[in-house]
Amino acid sequence: MDSLDADWNEQAARSAEQYLDFTSFSKSGLIDQLVYEGYTYAQAEYGANSVY
Image 1 (cartoon, rainbow, N blue to C red):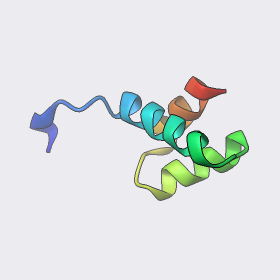
Image 2: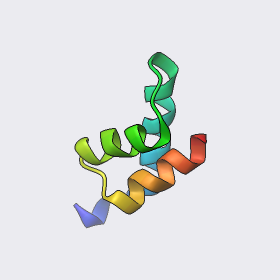
Image 3: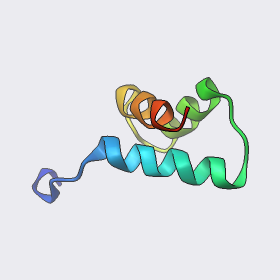
Image 4: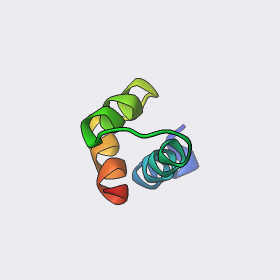
């Protein structure tokens, strides 16, 4: 999997934006949702910070 060279922070940011397109989350709720989806806490925090 590491060979895919995915930018997981960028993926988390895109996921965060998509979540906010169809529902509202508090920043902490969005982080929790992203962690639930499989992102690390740091990645989820990066994603949430990108949209807040």
